[in-house]
Image (cartoon, rainbow, N blue to C red; front, side, top):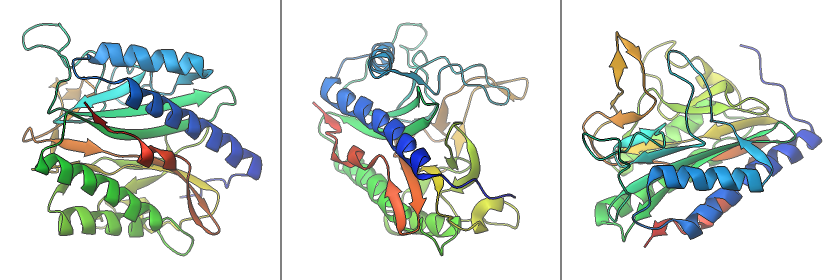
Length: 286
C-alpha cells in the first residue's frame, strides 16, 4: 500500500487550525451542556457553533456502504451506544419523542469539521452527566489514559502496531475492560477517512489488519480513537435484509461505553497532538 503523502508546513498549520475548531466546539459544549437536554437540542447547538466558526460539519450527509446519509451534525452516542449515534435515535421507547440525557448517563460527542480551507478536524470526547459512579470513573479514566499511552507510540521508528499494543495492553491487560472490535482510527486530511487504518487491538490472524506494520512516517495525520466497553468488545446494529440500515453502533451486551479521539500529526520528533486541549475540558456535567 502506498504511503500517505507527507504534509508541508503550510498544510500542518491548516490541519491544526481545523483541529482547533473542533476543540473550541467541545469547549463550548462543556460549558453549555446540562442534564435534561435532548440529542436534537445538542445537535442544533453544534450546528450553530459550526456556523459561528465559519465551517461545516464533516459528518452531515456523509455516506458509506449501505448506510443512508448521516443525518446529524455530530455523532451523539448515549451509554451502550458506542459511536455513530444520530440526533434522532435516542427516543422514549415506542415513540419518536426525544429522550433527555440525565444524571448517570454517558454521552459521547464526536465533532467533525471541514473549514473553509478544506481541511478536516475530527475528535470525540465522553461527557459524564452527574457525579460518576466508581465504575464510570474507572472507565473514563481508562479511556483517557489509553489514548495518551497509544499516542506516545506514534513516532518514527514505530509501526502502527505499537499503538495497538499500548492501548490493548492497558485497557484489557490492566483495566480489565474491553476494546470494541472492528472499529478504529484512521488517516485524514482534506478527506474524512483515508489510510492508514489504526486499530486499537493487535491482529489475531495474518491479514486481519494490513496497515499494522506500516511505519509511522513524519507528516502523516491520524485520528486515533479507543472505544471501550465494560462487558464486551462485540457490537450490534439494526439491519434489514442482511444490510446495515442504521448508523448507531451498540455494545452487544448493553454495557456502558466510552470514546476518546485525538487528531495527531506524526513529526520527526514524535506525535504532535492537535487537539490536546480536550484533556483540559470539564467533562463532568452537573
